[in-house]
Amino acid sequence: MKRNRPSRNIALKWLPALLVVLLGFPVAAETIHEERSKYRDITVTQVRDRRCLLFNVHRGDRNQTCISMDDRYRLVFDYTRMTFAGLLLKPDPKRILIIGLGGGTLPLTFADLLPDATIDVVEIDEAVVNVAEEFFFFSETDNLKVTVEDGRPFIKRAGIRGESYDYIVLDAFSGDYIPEHMLTREFLEEVKRIMSPDAVLVANTFSTSRLYDHESVTYQRVFNEFFNFKLPTSGNRMIITQLDPLPPRGRLVTEAQKIAEGLEKYGVPLLEYPRRLSTRVDWDMSRRILTDQYSPGNLLRDN
Image (cartoon, rainbow, N blue to C red; front, side):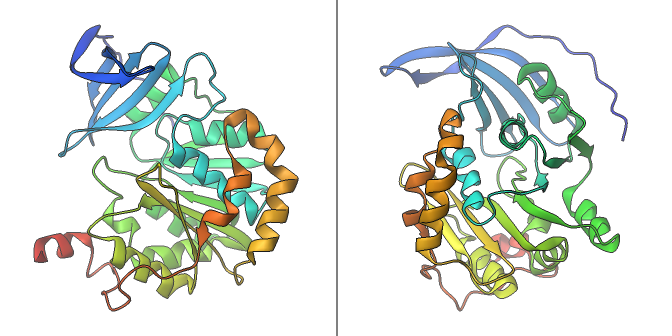
């Protein structure tokens, strides 16, 4: 889909909130861009060498992407680093699908790490793509393409065409939470249909939320089992799964030892990850699964 770049006014303002960075000193964040897209308010701020993309929908600003201007290879957030734990199950993916662009740090890192891989990114908001290009050094290449579209119909059509991927990342956020039509059993079945036999699925969600039990039960119903990957320093969790039975921890450790060095420049501590990947059930298994007829919106209205 051809994208038209809208004109922008670069606003040099100061956010009223103070961010604490480096040594604990409060420094005002400079707003270098803001706009209202079809889906959300988008703001780009900078504090010293750190530039961040924020979405504002209903519950205040949320950082979606931050980069260090002094070291653009190094991933800032735990959750972006955690996404690469899927390489412990699939270390050499050739076809990668990422739902949700943000500032583009994930696809850029995959492209740098795996230059022979083909990477498809699906982002519903054209304004986000434009901001990623203008402020976060994102650009398409022969092997890295962006489609401006809702991720669910993209996946459904890919399944109808018989296409498949061997590394899929679900990283779509509306600003408050994951879009509810990307949390249901029907959606996960559609994702399952485009997974190659040895593919890995990595889904970024939250480690605590009112939907935690429902999400977990839904993934368990579709995939039977998954690794629940959490870090004490992050409010996110990664649900990591595949079509085959999950590998034992010893195999994860062995794989980490093989490929960890290649991830060091991105700040990914891969050797620490195998012991954090758990299959322990820490959710209420009696909770109702999420479906297209019984979605998160129903749950929030019921509570």
